[in-house]
Image 1 (cartoon, each protein chain N blue to C red):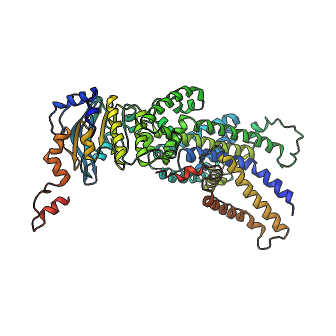
Image 2: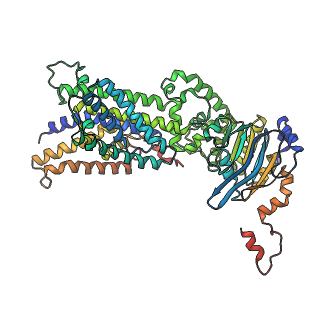
Image 3: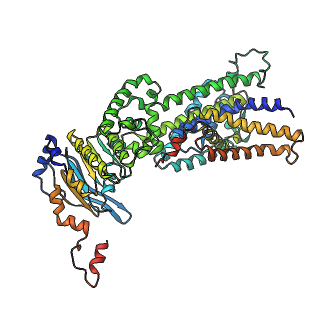
Length: 329
Length: 299
């Protein structure tokens, strides 16, 4: 049994590209759900919007990646407006229903044959999407690998910039939630009529939170497209959104660092159990499982872990139990 | 009741004086109305919950809106403040047509309400609840919020004002506590203080005394009177007749959705229509063997 392999693989994934993508999606959800109380069950639609905007602008229209990132932000904003205008005046549940339906609608539309010329159909978009970004890589050309973390030169550059993006959005969220703006959205989360009665335009604030969360999610998609140099429609399934929620709840909703800690923890558990079980089966320690079972077993373990967390620490790693103890309504 | 000592001050006397010459009949016009409502109707299916022909609220006075359960007082409140949509009707605030206006805009132009079920934001601290009430905050704008130096000085002023009000409402020792840890009565006080942060011209209190112990009731009465002293018009819904009698300058009585009586507290309490509405038209009639009186009362 190769323990060092298990550890290095786990660590590499825990702070790797996937962790960054999920972390960004979870930061977006933290703004929407954690602070404002908006139940967005279609975060993956925003991630897909970011990925596809970048893929289409760079590959189909052959324009610059930097312009493509701007387009990604604009598309995410438009989606937020489309989803928000009819639903944000209604009760919270309506947004949940509409967003989950919309996210599947997006996936089925982008993979349909009708738009194959532009969006690539079921094969998605493949090519040098992130070339403009990878050209800026300052790492030495003969870079092999870091001592423990097994990233390629290209991946390492994505990881470095990715965590900087995460840090910037975390800083933005931190600044916002400690401002009067943050006070209003937290008030909305608890009782929007109370906030309305004090003369605040609750609809506008909910819309701002939905847009901000969506744009941050879209950056997850942008990182994804740049890192993988491809956009695959079937990666944008609803479970992506629920993994992002898992991350948010692990770290603690409405905590600035919740999504970061949650994302790292999520991938430690997921990658760690996967690598460990794989190695253990190979070494003959476990004989009742096949290597093909590992992928599913780790989600079983993750689910059990989440249940245990909800029972013993419902506020998440960083949450404040006192807040939960108060009756909200 | 220690009413006379307080009500003898100038603004209160003015309010009384202005209303002294007004007839005590439903829909009567007042010398200086802040709110005028016409034909306000709200139907829930076949039930007409509110059907107010005409009502005016005198500026600077404390007006009580009373009536038996199900009279439509709270629904009328919700309609006027924009929290519910009227089927028909127009109303003006300060001479400005405001029917159909969004509730947050009504609050901004000076019509601020509280709720029957207190809406203190329990997961926020007392001081944050207060700060939320302040109007025209730079830091409430998305892009300005990111730069604390743009709103820090304003925030300090808001804090000072909040502390002043909290001291007045005897909540200054609870500043850093979560509002959820306050007692029911303290939450009522907090909601009232928070509404005052929004500098209302007309404050509308929906059952301010519900579930409040007698000691706190007295201090709440004092606070409501002091609002009038500062020139704020007060309209409140209440069941407690003693309280209504003690502090209101004018009483409007609703029953089955309409205004059935209006007048100074003393006159209204003696009004036969009011007594009938509260106790039933046959409350002093002999019970006959047919039981007719009983069934008519029941509706």
